[in-house]
Every structure is written in C-alpha cells, then in structure tokens.
Length: 289
Image 1 (cartoon, rainbow, N blue to C red):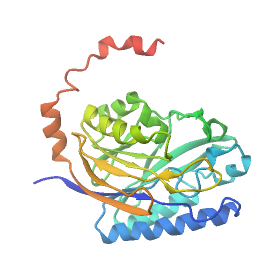
Image 2 (cartoon, helix red, strand yellow):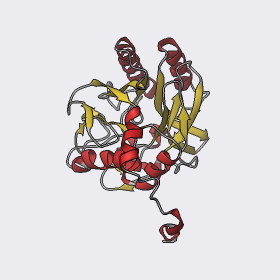
Image 3 (cartoon, rainbow, N blue to C red):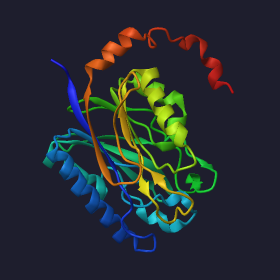
Image 4 (cartoon, rainbow, N blue to C red):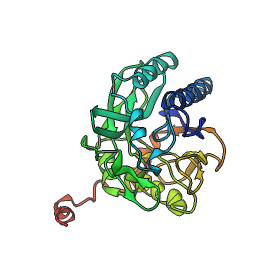
C-alpha cells in the first residue's frame, strides 16, 4: 500500500502596515493563518508549513531594533503553544517559522515543528544568515543557527526544515537527507528580480541530489519596510526526481496542496545511487577553506 501524505504550504501577504503596533501586526497575521490552516484541514492536509517569519512582515529589510519586539520563546511562547493546540485540533503536523528569543539579545530565525497530536518535536534554527544586497540585513536580527540539521519523525513522515538563504547551500540539504528526511520544507521570503531563476532551479536540484520531496514557500505582495520589490509567491512541491507537483500563483494568498507518494523515494534512490556512491573520505578539503 502506497504511503501517500497530503501536504500544504501557505503563501500570504502581510495584513497590517509596518506603522501599526507590533501586537496588532502579529494578531492580524495569526488570524489570517489560523483561517487558512482550518481550510487546509477541510481539504485533508496532514502536514502544513507556514512562510518564513509568518506572523509579521519581512522586517530585515531595515535595521531597526523596533522589530526585536516580535521575538518569542520556543516552545513556551504564545505562538508555539497556540499552534500546538491547533495541530491537536486538526490532527495536523505544523511547521511554524518564528522569530525566536533564546535569551535577551540572542535571537534566531527558527522553525518549530509540532506533531499531529499537538506535541512539540523540536526546532531548526536558520544556519546561513545573509547580510548583503539592498534589504537583507539579517545579521542585525539573527544569530547563526547552532542546532545542526535535525529531522523530525512525525505521525505522517520524517521531515526536515531549511530556511530561505539556506537553500543556496547544498551541504545542509545533503545533511537533511543523510539524517533521514523524506520531505524538506523551505519557508522563504524572496523578491522579483533578485533570485527568480534560482527559485525554480535550486530547490528542485536539492530534491534530485538527495532523493526526497521538497515543499518551498514564498510570500506574495508588497509590504513595508521592504520597499524595493515585490514578493513573487510561486510556492511549490516537487518530488524526488525534481518534477513540480503543485505550484502557487505569483501574486495571491494561497494554500498549495499536493499528495506526496513517499514510495517514490525508494524508486528514485534505486535508480540514482547518490548515497551509495558518495565519497566522504575525499571531502575533508571542503572544510579546510
């Protein structure tokens, strides 16, 4: 019997303007996503992932300590606890990207992973932090992740998480495969005219090189403090041979749903023996530079 898992991605525009109080911005985005998660439950979604920093705008477009007010603890903070309740209610695994506070002044770009029974399984902290080009001032806000590349055995599948800029680095994508990931979720915030061509290329390449499914999310619309361009959506799922299974629009709030047949992982890895033919004994020089 095939192992088919119905998965979902939520791409969404910001609700409130950046001038509004932090609490109002956060609550508006929480309300929007809770409604979309309920819609996903109606469609039978078993695993869902939200977009990067989902409960606010993409604030690293400016360097302003005002946005430090968005931080929360994981798992004891209000958003993680709320999503544990929602996961339990819908019997749905939820990947929840949150601006995490470890201690005062030490903050991470993090995704909490919650199982279908509402239990907190763990978290992934974004490893590669950009601080380049107009509008990507993330080192002002985030400490580089220090948890490695964990995977999480959920009720429906073993999953991993990579976040936005991480996707430009094949090393972590390979580590997730070596750690048993069947599906890797990549929540992001990416704008037109910057990495459009990489969007369709890199993440499908990770799926092919590592023989797993990828679900990747991008925001939509324009929002302050990002005043440089437009987030182009186009969230998608692809299978282990790189074929796109479902793709979102470029400019609309949307729930993207796909049925992932996890048996395809064995089929693809039987044909392409990339794990068997690896040569880790020859790779030490990669870490010497």
